[in-house]
Length: 131
Image (tube, rainbow, N blue to C red; front, side, top):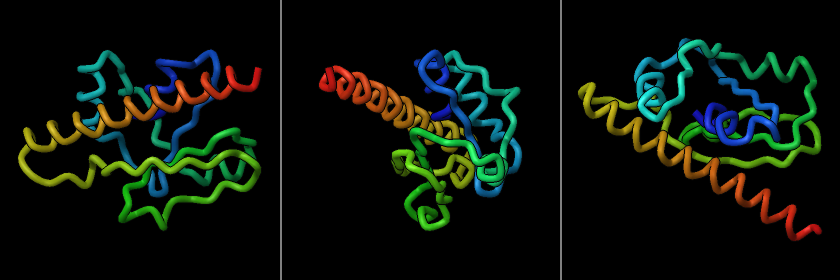
């Protein structure tokens, strides 16, 4: 979700990548919830973080979104990129009725969207202060 929002809000300023520690398939509830906000991620590929580590891509920013209980599993990316950790609950870990899972995923989506907006605003403010 964070990758999709960053692409939506600032694709001209960033090359974005998204990967999981243990990639699987897209969560259909996440796909549906993102569609309600006008973003179609249904064709996205679920990548392994190892694909990017193997390519030795130099990142300016590495944002991890592991929830706090999984934070110790978040990967380490070598290099000088700024590391940010945004802890969010993993929508695939939500239990309950389909309605409960949808509602909680919407809350997570909205938290991620706000965090991406804050990140972009802070970059703009930082650049303005450098001038």
